Length: 171
Image (cartoon, rainbow, N blue to C red):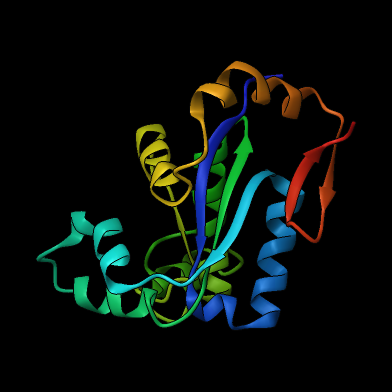
C-alpha cells in the first residue's frame, strides 16, 4: 500500500450551518479518507486575510474574507494515498455553475451557492497542503507524521471516533 498523502479540507460556513450538507460531506470524508485531525473554528478577519493572502487585490478577496468570517468552519487533515487529487475531484470545479452542469454530483455542484460559497476548500499541491495544515494546526508535527504515525494509520488497525470525527489507532 502506498504511503498516505495529507491534504487540508475546509468546510465553509454555509455548509457547516446546513445539517443536510454537513452530514453528506462528513459521510463522504469518513468513507474515503483517513481523518487525522479535525477542529471547528471561527475565523476572524486577520486569520482569514492571512490564509487567503495570495488573493489580495483580486476582485473577490474582500467577499471571500467576509464570507469565511461569517460562521464556523470545519477543518480536517485527511490522509489517502492520493488525498489531494481525490478531494479536489470530489469537490469538482471551483465554479459552482460549471460544477452543476458538468459534474452535478460533485460536492460543489450539489451544495455550492456561488464561487465564494462553493462548499469547501482543498489544497492544490503537497507544498500547499503542508503550509495550510501548519497554518490551522501549528501543533501538528510533519516529522512525527512521516516518521511514525503514517505507517500506523496506513497499516492499522484504526477505528473511526464519531465524537472526535477522527480515525484513531486501535490499541
